[in-house]
Image (cartoon, rainbow, N blue to C red):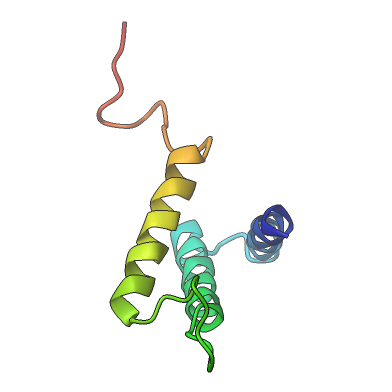
Length: 90
């Protein structure tokens, strides 16, 4: 389900970009992130009867969300760009 959900977000971003060619891609991406964050926080609320996987405080959820965002960024093929300031040239 993880890959299917991630692919759906990318597909939605592409659809919105195609439908709005003059839109700022950063604004589009920021909106996708905002929606994903809201859904993630909703989905990770503690249950009425907590289980061992529940994060029982807002700070625990924020830490886990940040960890997952960092992991996704580090695993992305788009993390590094040839135009990055810190790219070495031989």
